[in-house]
Image (cartoon, rainbow, N blue to C red):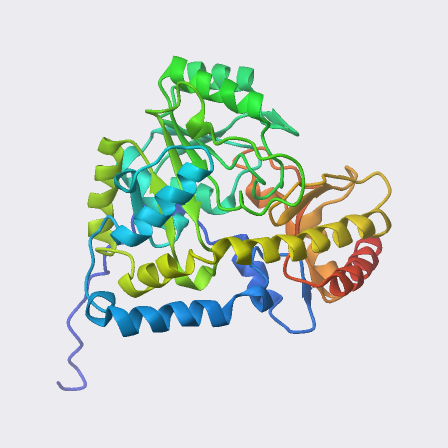
Length: 400
């Protein structure tokens, strides 16, 4: 090519899909990246306490599987999941009050994948999805990527209000309702049993799918367990129950599951075949072995997390501005607070991070009409002493 010759013209590559352009990343993960310094006391994440992972027990389960069934553990598996793991999950769910067989279940690569599979199987672009207000942030991402129109349902300290749900169903004609009714992320609130029955009755009357996401249900520190919505009368053919081992075993295993009616479960299995063929065989078999001692491990985690919740509750009155309100979750990982109207927790965050402590502003958790004065605090990752110091720093940051 001579100096007078030019390179041939090139056309631009096609653009990203509209759904990819319109849905942003997770603000929580953005905050965690900014606050990754070891000196930061981080109330922002939703991470289990790593010092409580049963490293020895999980390592033993992997060793046993590789010694006993190496060819099976290292081979491809069925999309639906390893039979031994599905049998173990089915027995656990049945023991907690919801009769379940292994064939009712699909093992997923974390419960987040279960949510994505359901969006693929149920949602057409433009369909309406009802959610809580505020709502689990990653669910908003999933529904946004699916092209759904996401509409929040008004609620109170007990969750969505059944009358408001019925009005929203009649007005919006949604495809599904997404809920985290037990120790909700971000608020930590739990829907009482009578309201669960009312929500199930609305779904039965109005023809509505319910996705009941329950990643935190086994982390109860006090109070009485409420039954799953999936076990309420009228819910049998329209509730999908999601579960996860991330909070009770280890998130790095990436193991979750969904329990759904047969036709929907088969559609999710087809979607999973297109996504990753199956969840890692070795992880499934090791988890199935570890389930023999899971209750003992969960009991230990509950004790430690309950102490940490109490430590945070003990220090909040001094840390937060006068006029603030907050809840007392019976379990889970999160506490929700609202500062006086004059406060904007998003604007205040840089000032708080300068004190080497972090929280998550509440605004990103709202599908519409965010409340700028709210924030989420995770209490499980730090010791009581660290929580006490973190709250002192938080108070300094909020006071300026």
